[in-house]
Length: 196
Image (tube, rainbow, N blue to C red; front, side, top):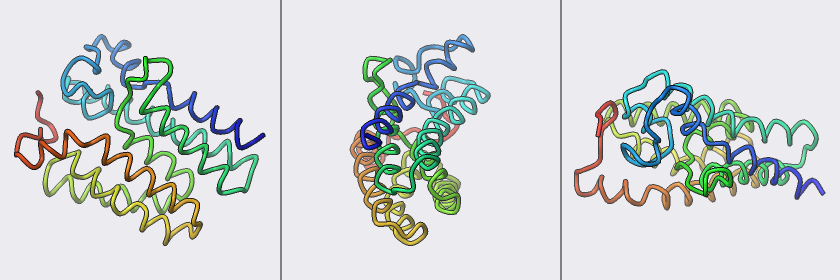
C-alpha cells in the first residue's frame, strides 16, 4: 500500500504551483504566459520580483522536501522514498491543479535531494552556483548539476535506488530544458538577471 499512497501524496503536493500562487498573491503576471512561460523562480525573477522569486523557490523546494520526509518518517525503504520523490517531481512538471502546465523541476529536485541527503543537496547547490556565477545561465547551471546528480547520489547516500532516481530526474530535466539547450547552442538564451 505504501508503494501507492506515498507516490500519490507526493504527486498532489508537487502539483501545487508555487510560481502561479505567488504571482497571484503579489499581483504579478501569470508566469505561464509571460517572460519565458515557465512557472518557476527564475521566470518570476525575470518578471521583476526578487521577493516573489525567493518565495517561489522556497515553495518549490518544499514540494520536494515534504513528500520525502513523510515517506522517510514512515518507511526506511529507499524504493518507497524514491517513488515519493519522483512523484513529487512529476507533480511539479505536470500539475493536476494547473492543467498539467508546470515548471522544469530544478528546485523541486533540489528539495527532494535535500531531504534524502543534505550533503548531496549541498554539492548540487555548489555546482549550480559555480556554473551560474561563471556563465550567468540558470539553465546551464541546472543541466550541469543534473549531469552530476547521479554521480553524487551514487557516492553520498550509497543507495542504488537514489542513484537511479537521480538518473531519471537528470534525463527528464534535459528533456524539459530542450528549448534552453537549443538557445544555449545558438547564443540566444537569457542570462540570469536579464528581463525578457
